[in-house]
Image 1: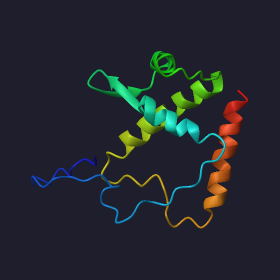
Image 2: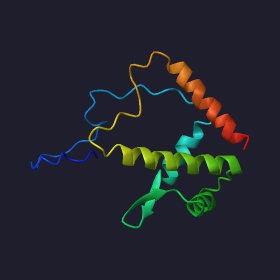
Image 3: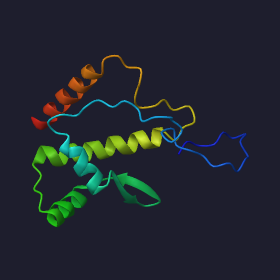
Length: 127
């Protein structure tokens, strides 16, 4: 939720930037390791930590694996943790009133963005 301007004393409800869009943003297709995004949402992209949120821990991932019977490889576990950290960082950055959207619907090279993401996931798999 974006923060209110200091001068905004109204009680009107705030909306997330995504809620204020008329349509869903164009997102690149994720091929090959897209199942990891499903796992991330199943585990939960963040966990409760103190007075706020924190990234998914390796303990949370172990518990999830035990409960679901899914065995993650080392690179899959690291990737889920990294995705959780990135999700948390972006959600915190999005609270600023002047935050830029993490996507660009006017991007003409969606295939290029998808290729870059695939290359990044492959690089993580080789760690």
